[in-house]
Image (cartoon, rainbow, N blue to C red; front, side, top):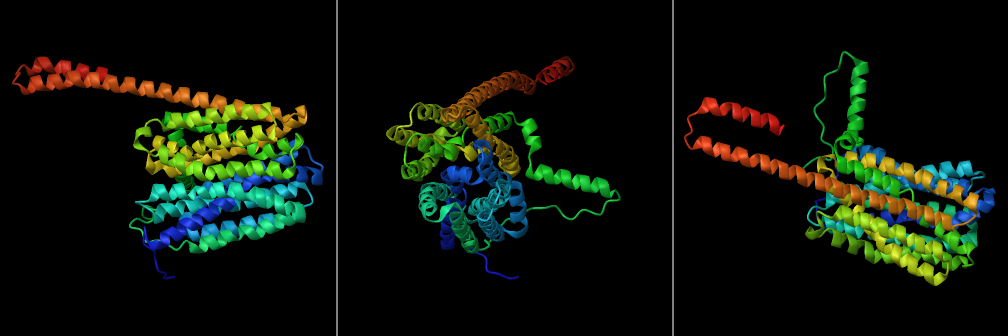
Length: 466
């Protein structure tokens, strides 16, 4: 079907950026408000903390795990159709969730279906910025990330207001209508004219006489394209970063789920408890772009992985302060400091991955990264809920979060330092080996005719250098 194509860096690109901001606010900012419904859902279904925690964990895990499937849909149908499909799925999941009678039904509808829909809309909004922006791509990504902060700020306030008047079922029904705005954002994503097609493929291969082997080869190519297991085996930096982040994620999302119930348990009213999450989001509106701009400076180019480890370490230490006191003023201070470390983690997470992995393999490395990350997201809140059911003390949840964050930060920082030291030794050895060869070549060029006597020395030096 013929249709007009937009140009990169055109005026319409800024409308696409606005759509990306709204989409990220609707999707990536939404899971932070689930903690407001935690007590209501627990009371409604007569469930334990561990059972209730599966709902936000499934939703957030699908928000990350659907990345490879989203990339396939984007390559086949484009960002516009994929984002609109995500909006429909997210809306249907929340509407169906409002009629659920069991927690299992809630897991499937508002958890799995809504999470998958949010993944399609969110990742499409990220992909389309790379097509519309070239010169201003860093600025566009920084501005788009403010949508997440706006969502973290507004979703808890809206949730608290609707929960009082409509209950959680009516609120979920309204949320289903809100998610349909992702379809409006998707309609703004007009196809863009690019010099390189989004998907480069080799020509059609001739039919194979061995259909089983051909199918297996096609599966292997698809896995290598979307899940970079070869990079995981060969790239030590990618292994360290992936393992460190997977371990870190076991503790990172816990404050978003348990901070509001923790504050309510210690006597804070529900409005002020919901305000704590909004404080984190409002602070991120300013801190996240600032962190991105600072980390993007050339002077930090070789040290971003250490800055990321430092942000994770600060995040873990901050959770210890929260566990020590539940006074409202202490929690407000905790939220402000937590926002600083959270902004650093959010701004540096994908940038460090870009520094470690070659850009021609970044898409597949990101797919494997998000899949492994989603496993930690899936099991972390239920594990914390089980700990809470056993101890009946919320402080242990924050101690658990601190343990995973601090240990992951120390592991990544120490491993990156060791890898850097090993790389410097290797480069020094290569330099020392290159100097004798250069001296010897100069001697040969100077007229040394004693070739038969020199040739064995050349061969011996080559063997030892290997």
